[in-house]
Image (cartoon, rainbow, N blue to C red; front, side, top):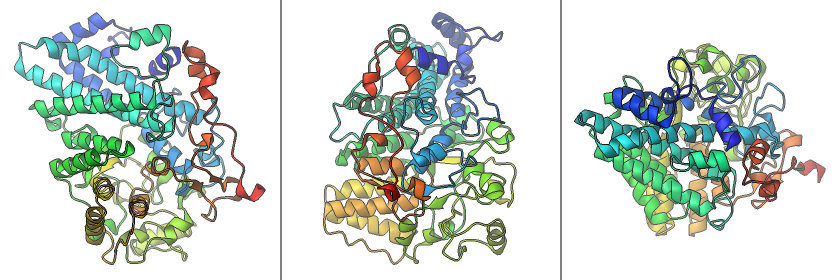
Length: 540
């Protein structure tokens, strides 16, 4: 497709596509490169992880103009602000204000294009790795170690590609259950990419996209479990930037949860917990700012950020700048804090250590040291401001914003396990949820759900609290068919919405550039998606 290909050409991190002099190489030449130097395949795989945190990957990267183009962390902030659990200021200092205002439902919107381009760029890189390396794996190398590495590389590519489709499927169509036959997004793979670029390609159904996700993850798991090569064998630092078999099990658990396949969701979540060996944060560990290092024991997968990465050297164009309350950035410098929905905060018991992840009505938190409290107070942080995320290396007023960003924590797997169990047998799910929350978050917790629907809501509440600010809240709302309810939550009156769960404004339209560039798409593909800015409740 024209627009996907054009966006993908901006990806500069895939060495399999570029000769030293910078010219594009053919598929046959790629095979020769891999044959002569298998380490080149690793460059492509590294490109997958690098794309997750690339600055300016779809705009060219002018730090003076494009402060939202920071890779996938930008998507997390964008979708959290589009939902009902996190808000910020309604000014230009909030670079995700269009998502908060929900004025981004047009096919010409920056946000719809950003969601599309980031994910198809990732798919583009994954497809290149697969098409370049998988044939060598099938042929077999005379060097056994190379075969083992090829299995690892291709396994990573399939896993990352599945993640991109998982994101796209939830953003451009309603959730799986009840919409299986609705049009979703085009499926571009290593097998049809040339045809798609030349002839265009139609949207696949939701069911077809989810099947592609399952197939990719299953194949990824088979490869990663069959090779003796580990992440530590191919990279020296921050190995959790790549997928382990446990993390792939986690992605399968997420996908089956979306599909309401409770048995498989429970099985995969348990496998992720068991195989990872990861342990949840203890109450003591959860009672201080954190969530900034990929080395933490509870992380299964994350975005690794280096001090030399462009998102860091820009100063302001990074996740901590937009989200942080203890470092140099938009929150502390101009007051573009991130607040929690006041009604959600009120539901958190005082006995729960997570209550301290946000400032209370007095603007304080028991989770902070005296120095941390003084820092946020002097800068005007007030009730509801998040203090969940620590600054890089724990240094107050840090101006090197090199925090890692979580993609998957083991705590999420426990919530998937509990929900999936409870939707099969209520008492088992309640027992799992009670054991987890009482042990790790709130010793006084007691789930008293009397029905599976009520229990699912109780798990949802725990997920809203636990995963706040990690890019999951919007998709949980959509998965459960909940209305977007900001009424009385603290939003500016111009952004205070109540939107029914079937309203097309909740899903993004296909970007106009894609409609223009893809011969098999037309404006009719956007009839049931997006639209103008909703009407605030105060205007009704």
